Image (tube, rainbow, N blue to C red; front, side, top):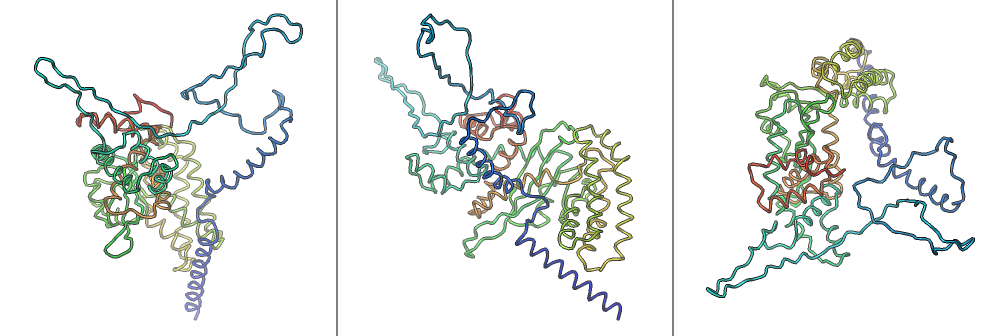
Length: 491
């Protein structure tokens, strides 16, 4: 009877936990911390109210130089922005007091930030014709290559459309509306053709980025769903964008950061196995079982993610408020406190700090989890969280043996976030080809962001150089981190 009662109580508690999680997912915030964008939306109105009060009462005396400032100091305007001077001379050359002549003793300079609206313009290409008086031969400069055969768009306009769609998440139909407000009516299908034509030029560069990223020995891997239109069934199917990120900044590694997106029509384990066929090294992954087959080759070491492990305990702590879950969160927070101290240091320094500070936390946590597990209902969410951690314990402890291994997969999670934003606006990809184009452009744009390169300036220049005949054997020069060294624009 006691066993029956224990199983019944454990099942009831498990169902109650699920109900609380569903309620929190629907009515509460789902993330572990307040979304910065949501917080910014709330603060915008408050800051607008402050601005209105400041404008209504402009006579408020400025604080003294030695008085503490209430808010952050205003940053100087960027030096790379063009300056347009507007001279305000004295109304008269005579002194308004005594009528004497005035002479210059200096000047006061202040700056304001101005905005020049985007504008469409027509680029007229004029090719004069010349004829020989002797042989009547006609000479004329050859017509320049166009990025879209017979199309109207220049590389600059194509770059604008790509960045608006894949970086600013503005669907093509909205872009068509914006262009119409500027006096140019273009069909959405025309813009879609431009996107396809531009991606044709960028395919080779994406393939070169693909080879460069997968040749690394430390990568972060994850995937995210992408709805794809399936006309035969009258609905959408679920494709996947597999993301492989390289970020060695945590241990001052030599390779530049990069993010590679690869589209696949499903989430079968064969997809990452095919992508990482020649990969050798450490792969930071989440709990997806398909990655386990990679470790069977003996050339790939899997490092599990503490952020995913923490999330399991966090969900229990939010739903049931159990002391065990809160204690687990405090222990994991101790690991992250050590990582904060060693971020950016060399691998030997990171490894030494981890072995002296993190290993005692890890050893004590394992013994504690193993002791707590038998005391909990077997089907409860807290027991599931503990089993999740213990089943991956060797992979979770990899960072104690290699200073280059990170504690979590956050670099690839950050690379996935823009896809989620685009998914909300685009709703779905029109075809598998649309998913592949999504992967091509997102790979280049996100790699630009990681390397401090402005995506529009990069794509405009790269498309221009490709159209003008950039050699295929020199594609390395067009990768974002190599391009940055010659054309730096602050992102």
